[in-house]
Structure formats: structure tokens, C-alpha cells
Amino acid sequence: MLRKRIIPSLLLKEGRCVKGVKFADHRDVGNPVTAAKVYDAQGADELLFLDITASREKRDTLFHVVEETAENCFMPLTVGGGVKTLEDIRCLLLAGADKVLINTAALSDSELICQGATQFGDQCIVVGIDFVRGRNGQAEVISHAGAPVPEKDPARWARRVTELGAGEIVLTSFDREGTREGYDLETTKCVVDAVSVPVIAAGGAGSLQHLADAFQTANVSAVSAGSIFHFTDQSVIKARAFLKTAGVNVRPYL
Image (cartoon, rainbow, N blue to C red; front, side):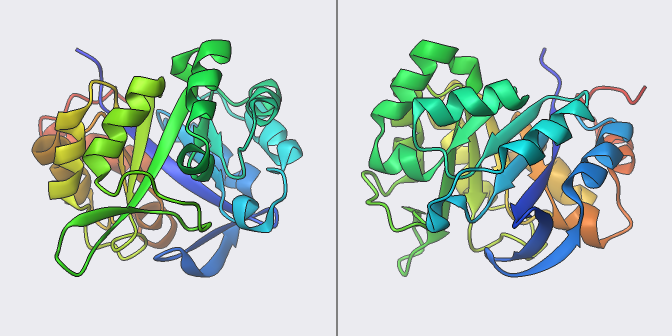
């Protein structure tokens, strides 16, 4: 049985780590390489590293920051932000990324998923799906960069991108991001049940119990968290110990 993963997320803006609420009002939380070293030392299973303004500002991901981070970490690194072409994917992999996350481009040019999986392997291609709860209470896929959304339902869109070759999905609740109110377990479980690839829950973790809930209720393969590690006294080490006690099949801390 595959171990469940704990994945800290680092959001990059102008070369610095930031954290906000609902993708806005970001606060500086430090140097990305320094933060990555801390998570690596704590035994994080992976690191999710996102340049949050690359797509909107139409600029390349800061490859040199990715390279320096990869050189100083031994855990797998997933990198996204502004990925629009096969060349972007190639450059990120050469810079040291183990996986590349595609979000906006997956909505506007879904063939990039298929092309990326064919050229680099589906294990390298991660698709980010962001969603909100609409006025009717239904979850709807959104694009922060204004790209057209081909499929509003997160579960159906997740199924489509996996058919195209996505090897993993990062599912983020816009309504919960940075709020520390817990993951949207209902939507997350719908997506998990709809696909056969690993799903990473993101957006809303504020306590160690929230992490356990995502594993035990939504049956995700991994949890991504930022605020709980940036703004509370919790750590990856504490999270791993808590989850193990709760019966979640996590990797033991070495």
C-alpha cells in the first residue's frame, strides 16, 4: 500500500515566499530556499513550489530559484506557474523539478497535457484544478488568469485531464485557501472517486485534524498545506506523528 504524503506548499512572488487568503493579500514569509531546507530537514515527502503570478504577468517561472531550491533539497519537487509550452516543462525538469504543474494552460490548451505526458512521461505531469462554490452551492472550476473553462464540474474536468495524460491532480478550494477552516472534503472526495491517479488536497488546512480528515474522509493520496506550517507552531514532524497515531499510513520520520 502506498504511503500517504505530506506536501508543504511554497508560493513564490518576485523571488520571495508569500502566503495570503483566497489568493490575495499576500504576506512575505521568507526566502524560498531557506524554507525548503527546513521542510527537507523535517522529512517532508515532497514540496509544492508555485510561482503564483507567472501566468498573469506573462513571464517565465524563475528557473534560477527553482534550480537553487532543487540543489539544496533531496525531496521530490513539483513546480508550477506560467507553464505554457513543452519548452517550459523541459526547462523546469532540467532545473531540478521532478514534476511540473500545469493549471491555466491546461484550461486554454489541454493538448499540452497530452504532449507533455508523451514526451516526458505522465509521472511528470501534474494538473492543478482550482474551484469555488457557486451561488447554487455547486463546486465550479475557475481560472485566475481568465482562461476559458472547458468543464465547470471539478470531477468531470479531473477525469478529462487524466484521460489526456495527467499523472496527478492538485485540487485547491479557492474559498478555503489560506483560511485554515479545513479542506472542502465533499468536493475533494468526488474528485478522488472520479479518477484513478493520485489527488492532492489543497486549500484550507488549519489543524492537524484537518490533514487527517482529508485522508480518512476524502481518501486523498496527499495533503498540501502552507498556512498551518507558516503561521502556527505545527511542523511536518508533528503532522507525521499525529497522522500516524490517527492510523494514517504515513512514512515514518527518519
